[in-house]
Length: 224
Ligand code: DX5
Ligand code: ZN
Image 1: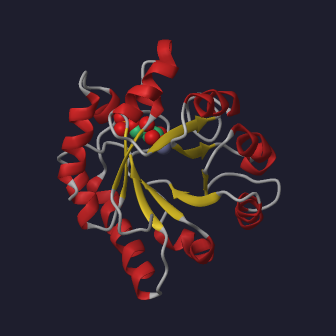
Image 2: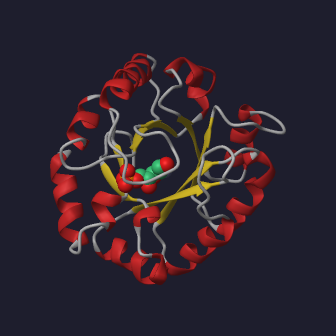
């Protein structure tokens, strides 16, 4: 699948955690191909979610592509555990601390046979991703301050950056996906698409409604 394919990615953060296995199945039955997993360490972001054990639990429930978003410091220190847990893509933040470096961490993800991504906090300019754009499969432009689901889409602050990333990619013959994450609904997804996004992370807007399949279809229709 290349960067011209649009995909809606449910984010497990918004699922009912009293029945994780059933929720993963619900996403799969609703047509999800990729599932987004938000790992938070209580230090890089002001919230704590889950770690490798949850990724491994989800892996046991599904063959879906697992898109793991690490909102943590020292991703390089914890990397092997997420690789072993069954992640397919691992995205790391440029703003986080590393024992080694962002470059080395990306190389290790690649060497393990996984896809890799870079994420940008809303305050971080696109230029911060420039040193890595030749070595990534995905660039995640956060459309909320990372840490919590259910926040409003930061259009003014993030769409110019997304468009700049798209323009740079296309002008240089690069192929990475552009992913948006946070506040993505049927009314905001088209704005993100217009500015270059093809991967749409949807927490509240996918797991929230009782009919997830209908919600996923409506979100997909909004980005056709
Ligand atoms: C926010 C997370 C998101 C979150 C999005 O820090 O990275 O993936 O689940 O949630 P919604 O779609 O509810 O804004
Ligand atoms: Zn995320």
